Image (cartoon, rainbow, N blue to C red):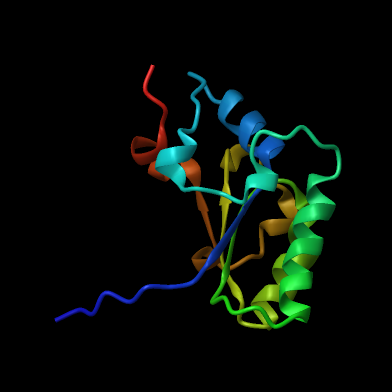
Length: 131
């Protein structure tokens, strides 16, 4: 019998990457954030130009303060997070990066083992906002 183990993972969403990725698909689609998961309130609905830096800083601050969490899940597609991803893998604190649109994912992730990435399109049926 398989045990249901609850993980204390943290998810960080680059909203601009998410928006651009789902709007560049044909047909376009929107993510229902309630279905997707409740995210850090600072990362949802605020328009900010420094989201990349905020996400990296928040993760590093949590690690520095030794806050209890299992692994990080990141929703983004650009290469701005590649150094962070490599570091988190090295520290065994990285679960997965979810590309909003794999077609536009940065080439920097090409050598990333497949267990560390997936595409939101693969779970679209679970998180798509109803019209």
